[in-house]
Amino acid sequence: MIINLEFDKTVSSIAGNPYGKETFDEQVKKIINYNEKTTIVFPSYIRKIAISFIQGFTKEMIDNLGYEKFFEIIEIDVSSAKLKEKFIESLK
View 1: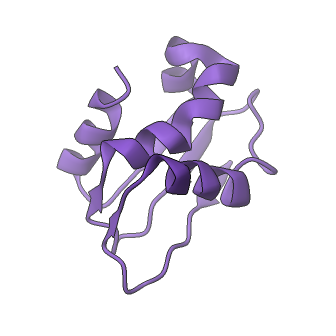
View 2 (view 1 turned 180 degrees about the horizontal axis):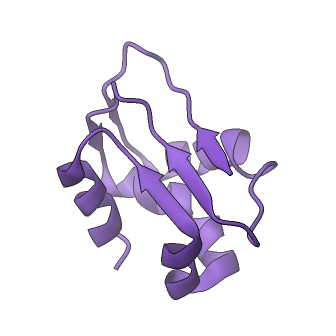
């Protein structure tokens, strides 16, 4: 499954635990299947993601899957390798 996230195209940075949770609730929660490998795609115009956003966005998925299974089932696709590394490191 591939989930393509959408944000205001004038925004290049996203931040805030509540905004991360809101994004998950509105764009992922109703369609994610925790029994199937899922790629979550952030648009290429998103260049910065604050740790607070990542924590809010991933909390429910990690609560359902645990850290180990999260990394087995969920693939994060972002605009750069550096941003992906930051995303993953912020969850460890």
